[in-house]
Length: 132
Image (cartoon, rainbow, N blue to C red; front, top):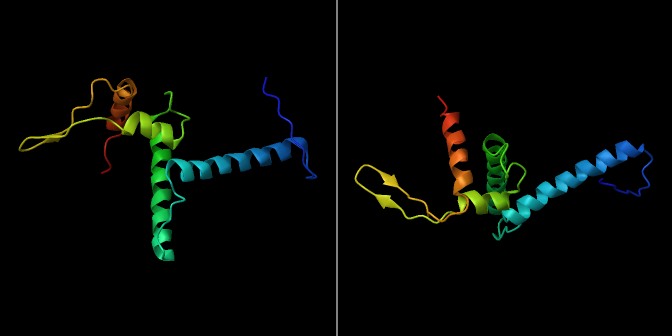
C-alpha cells in the first residue's frame, strides 16, 4: 500500500490538490532528467545566443530520447527508465570499427551486458522502416 500525506493551504478538494502536486512533481522530474542526464545546465558560453542554441540542442536530444523510449522500449525493462540508464545500457557500447572498400561495420563487444536487450530494440527500429 502506497500511503502519502500532503499538507497544504490550498482551498481545493483533496484529489484536485494531489493531482496538481503530482503533475508538478512529474515536471520537476523531467527538468532533473534534462539537467542531470543530458547536462543541460552547462551553458558555458559567454554569449546569450550561443547558450540559447546549446540549450535547444539539449532539449532536442531529450525529445529524441523520449521518442526512442516510447517507440522502441515499450514492454522492456527500460520502458520507464530515464535518459541516464538508457544511455548506459544501450548506447555506450564497446566496439571496434572495421572498414572494407564498400562497407563500414562495427562488431560489438561479446561480453556486453546490454546485448540481450539491444537486438530486440534494433529489430523494432528496423520494423519502423524509413520515411518516404
